[in-house]
Every structure is written in C-alpha cells, then in structure tokens.
Image (tube, rainbow, N blue to C red):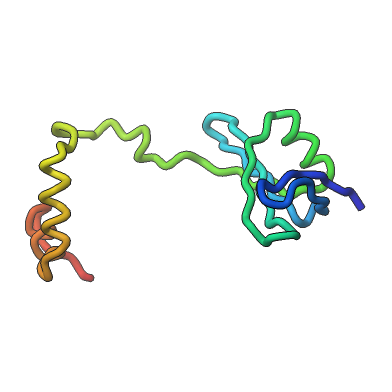
Length: 114
C-alpha cells in the first residue's frame, strides 16, 4: 500500500493512503490540487499541486477528479455597467423586506415557480 506524506497547517506532517486523497485537475487550464481530511484534527485540507505532483499521486493510486470552469466565466453576454456601492446597498435593503423575491421576479420579467 502506498503511503503519502502531506502537511496539515494544524498538525504538521501526516501520513495518508491513496484512498484518503483526491486529486483535482481543471480541464480548462490544467491547474491541479489535492485534498484530504487530516487524520489528526479532521480538518479538510486543500493544496495546490504541480503537474508532476498530480502525476505522482495518480500513479500511486489516488483518485483523479477532472472538472471544468463554469460556462458563465466565458459568457460574452455581460450587459450593463458594473455594480456600484449604491446598487449593493439597495440590494441589501431589498433583501430585508418580506417581498424581495416578488420584487426581483418582476424586475427580470415575471415570477416563476418557486
């Protein structure tokens, strides 16, 4: 069984098995990371990983999870000016009201099933 050494900010060096770790790679920009739950404090730890570290972990039997960036990040349909501080203040005031959802639904063209 492969033993993987990693570091927890609270506990220091810990030893893990391949089943304790998940490698995540973004298919859109090849950024990699790995995550595990610390056996000492049970904290969820996420660390960046170079392509070399990803390859080593996967070769050691760690599960690979490939994900994609949300489509909204490349959506070219952005319209209108950016939010101002006044917009944010108005939105916060709206959320404090009981009818916030009905007001927002009316603003975007009608209410939908809730």
